[in-house]
Structures are given as C-alpha cells and as structure tokens.
Length: 460
Image (cartoon, rainbow, N blue to C red):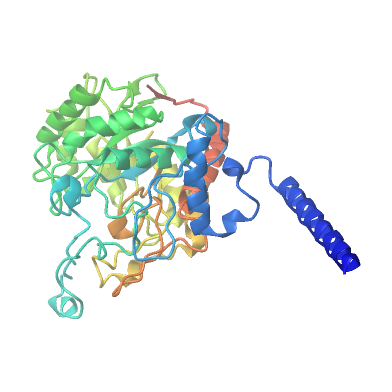
C-alpha cells in the first residue's frame, strides 16, 4: 500500500512538473508586444478577451503600451459579440497623418439622450419617382434603436453627433487610419437638410477634438436652400471669420505659396456657371478672389460635360464624391486618367473620391442596381489603387459615416433583430476599413512625394 502511495505521489509530481513546463513554454511563445500581456490564446475567445482587457488596463495605466486597444464600457445589443467602444491607439503610436487624404464626415445624427429624439437614424424610406415602383416597396420611417436607416449597424449604436465622447472616438478612428483632414458636411446656421436639424453649432467642438489628434477640418458645403453666389460669399466669410483662426482649420499651400482654405461644393452643377463666375473669377461682380476670403473651391463633377462648366464657373478643382464605380462619369475609375489630364491642362486640382462600397436600400429599396459589394475590402482597395494611378492632388474618401448609403469606414458590428440582419465586416474586425485606409494612406504619401514636385503643403 505504501509502495502504491509512493508511486502515486511520484506520478502526481511528474504531472505537475509537466504542466509547469508546458505553461512556461507557452509563455515564451507569446509575442513580446502582446497587448496588455494577454495570456496565450485568449484572443481566440472574443468575449473573454474584452473582459480581460478592461480588467488589466486599470492595473497598468502607467505602462507604455503598443496596442490598438483602449477598452471602454460595452453596450448590450442583440448579438453575441461586441468589440469595445474605443479601441484606438494613443497619438504617439501612429505614423504621421496624411493631410492629402480627406474623408467626408457627417454630424447630423441624434438620439433621445442628447437631442430629445432620433435624428437621421429614423430616416424615411424614400419614394421612387415612378409611383408604380413605389407601391412595390415598404413605406414609412425606420424605428431606432434596433431598426435604423442603414444596412450596417455602428459599433457606437444609434449615437448622437452632439455626444462629445462620440466625436472624440471618431477622431481617434480617423487618426488610427492616418487620415489628415475631415471634410465636414455643412449647412449655414439655422439651416439643415430635410431630415435633420441645424449642426453649425457643433463645429467648435469638432475643431477642438480634431486638434487634439492633429487632424484638420475643411468644409463640404451642402446645397442649402436658395444657394447662390451672393449668399455663398456671406457663408464663406462667416466660416473664415468664425473658425479660420482655429489651429485645426485646414489650409492648403498652393504652388505660388498662398495658404488657402478649401471648400468642397456639393451639387455645384445645379447652379449656373455664370452665377459661380460672379463669385469665383477675378472679374466677377461678387468676386472673392484676392480678398481675405479667397479659397480653393472644389466642384462636384458628375457628367463629362460638367468639365467646361466648372472651368467657366471659376472653380479651382473637381471631386467625384460617389463611391459607386460606374454610377456617374466622374465616379467611374476608367475616366480618372482623362479627368486628371484635363485638370492638368487647366491648372485644376483633381480629387477622386474612393469608397468601401455602396448600399442604400434601407432608404431607397428600389435602388439595388447601384449596390456595390465590399468584397471583404477588395472593392475599396481597387478604388484606392485606381486613385493612386491617377497621381491626384488629394484623395477624398466617401465616407467616414454616411450610414444611409453604406459608404462608411467607421466601425460596424454584427447585429441581428427579429426583423433585420445587418451587414457587417466579418470575417474581419470592425476596424477593417480603418486599417486598410492606414495602409493605403502610407502608400499614397510615399508615392505622392515622387510626383508632387510643387510641394504643396497643408499648413496650420
């Protein structure tokens, strides 16, 4: 009996030594830069990983961490997994931002907590111009928070653009993607899009949060009611007077050394070129040229014929906005080399717009022909590659957070409700499109340096 006990003790001791050796071996296999010292294999279990990160972060605040994770409180939704609210790095951990890479940004979202109601998440289902087609599809509006006007669902939920923590998280995400400039959708004070509220009062907060991450802010002038050359002059003056001295206000250094603000002008073609010429040519009756409010004005090119209208209007460049290859002449990659050649001939800036995909059937259910599948990031990379081949002055991204049209690069998560299964970025992480943007931002920065001999630099 005693002999049996000795054997049992020896076997047990050997087993313990084996387990100890195995654990030490696994520890040695862990990468030296494993985030927060994660135990080996823990990241295979998403829910456990999130809990671990929250606990260990509190005990290691003073450590320097080379990690993309910065966990915050999790919100519960009807899915089995949700990444942390903020998983961006500290500013010193990223390469320099690319100020030639701009992203279109929308601050028109609202929820009851911050705005007393849902704004834009409850977007109406738009009617087709043919009543017979309209009758084939659902009518009414979306019903947040589970039913929103988007085919994807944000990691931050049905957020408010007024929420300072949301604005900060957005700036962190842009920073993590090496984006240098956000082009803010803008309506004049006391004006708004037909589905939203006024948003100009948010600009100071957006500028402050952007500056914290070394981002710059330019303005995407929307087609507000009765927009013309006269009130456009007043609104440009308002923007520059009110925001022009902020360190995050974007300026672009031209070939002749002038540092000028930049304004994207959405749907510029709906105003006659003669009207624009009053504002944008030196001989115009409302000329803004060579004044304290002179700037670079970038027109939207939709059709091929718009090229010469843009020239006659006195614009400084063109952009293409739409993230749907083949939808318009301007948004078709095959035309970008020709458009760049045209711009070079007439000393215009060429700014192609790239996007990760397109799907707006949550608000335009009849528009399936314009859906562009993301193909796990391949669509986006194809667009970015086409843009780089054109050697553009700037590249714009459509969009950071235009959720209605499914062009967002902001983080999206899996979500399923009783009536809806939202699209997501799986099998990749919610940060897929931010990571792809960073990859191509660095590539663009290197390639641009080889052909931009004019050294046109953005300035503070």
